[in-house]
Image 1 (tube, one colour):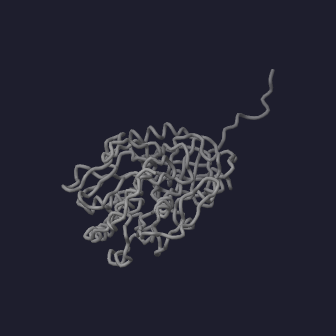
Image 2: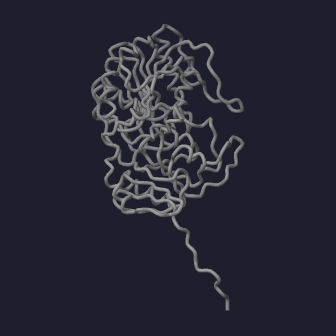
Image 3: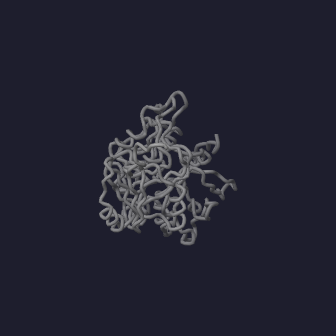
Length: 401
């Protein structure tokens, strides 16, 4: 008869996800130790986890990756998207299905676990991310606490209280937490395979970017089209911006409730709109523009997060696959006369773009900088530059190179 020499062993959980309704999900901890309270969303992208986790638009959120294998290409210093890495703007937590393996990629400079620790991101793996995704789809994005303790000792009742007590993202201005502390000039141009990034040498136009949580690749694409980009903090006044004599003004992406950020951003944008300077907005910048024009925004049930979202551009009749990251949306029915809906999501019909009739002013909800994601919408940066060139009496660039 066989002899059992050791008792049946089960792995002690070293990380927990505790939802506001009291649900406790156990997993294996990695990344930073401690806990963070935030909203849980899911992202359907297959690649680009480093860009996703460093996107300032994810401030106040825990990202559940629906793709099961995260981390196997490692991390590097080229793929971060927040403007000031020391500030660690981006997601506070991450959830993976499979264990993170050792990196295997020629660009890898480090292991995801160590990178998460340096970034202060609490993470867990080993849970059924499909079930969590279904929960979010059915019940909406929950408030939760993600906690990591290597010894597996948790005060679960206290974590439940924290999750239940957190007020959530509605009414929360997070742009002020992730914006630049002072003005700066951006000159780095887009990444080229086997060469990396480079610096522009002779900019031909000037764009002021209002930083509500801007991503690096947005600034690179503007610089790559000949723009000297001056990045200014979110609360910079219109008088100061206009004194810089910009050829165009960019309204960046960012986190949080647009109505909360709009308390100081909307008056500035309305003053800018009194001029004929071209304006282009992305994500939170799109929502800020809509609010400035008299529209409304609303909290979404599950949000749009991923690199495979179909959007129709009514100005061309074409369907694009785009990157998205937003939990609030513009209410299309609230848009006043003179504001045209230019883009719409083919998943749920929500608004994804507007333009001011007869004016060089437009914005989109999705992320055309494609970091990560498909590059179908890169043409929007050329569309913005062409508005500037038209105002200056210059020949337009081809929208699609």
